[in-house]
Length: 328
Ligand code: SF4
Ligand code: F3S
Image 1 (tube, rainbow, N blue to C red):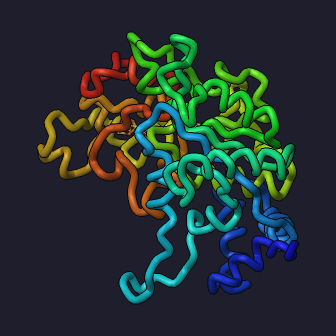
Image 2 (cartoon, rainbow, N blue to C red):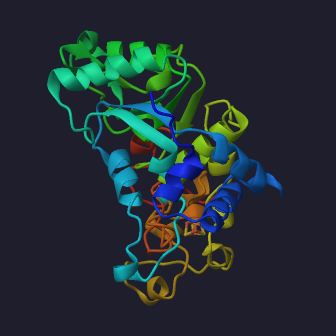
Image 3 (cartoon, protein in one colour):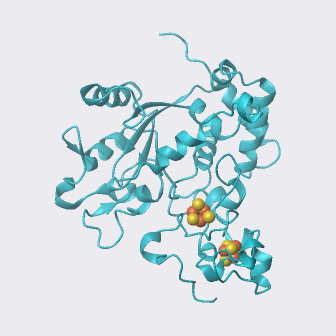
């Protein structure tokens, strides 16, 4: 078997210079809020590590997290954008090797199932299992079957041989949209469907932000452990701080300067969206820091309140979205 390239070598093959590689490591250390000197530790680890095999399971979902992944992985075309720098999310598919992903993989049917089984056998105890979507438990799991097997039995088998598991997106965390009342399929998240899932990391969001996924994987490859997590399994670097306290519109909130109608002068002037239903005061997420679309923007910056997509039970607890929260 030919020797696998290290992550640094794989990046170099794609035209990422040593200088840009070090820059990426520095950006990762910043996202992870690591102390000074950590960028060098990351660079040493990634220079030696090979890509992490991944089985990506997709169940009851809208494919939003996969969309987020593939949209993030658009290396800027210098001819079009003038940009030449590799970005954090460009790194994602260079640190992982997706061996099974129903939406992205070329094989289908029997050969797709075979790829999953081969990855389980060849990389038992080494691969990462990423779960997107909720798992239905009603009627013995009959509401989501793939290759004649229920999602429930597939997830339980795949996680039991994994090195670690990621519940990616709000559906994989707590059932998400399918799990909202009245939850006709008995949809649940990974922790409930497979309580024995080893080393579970939860990255909620609708969709989840790929920057938080890649940063967590880089941390895993560097320190052989997930970054610090809360009791629900969410990494503190990404879900430790409230959006409201870090919002660029916070001064307007403090000064009682609120948007009262979409498109009014206050809206045009970027005032606080609390009275338009913003859920920033009850949502913990680093959207204000990592943003979306390669750091271009995020919901509140775009003029829409946060709907709390990274908080537990948000479909039931945050709707209707445009009704303001009760004043603190
Ligand atoms: Fe808080 Fe939302 Fe207002 Fe920002 S826009 S200050 S998160 S209520
Ligand atoms: Fe979701 Fe609110 Fe961030 S809606 S993407 S948690 S700003």
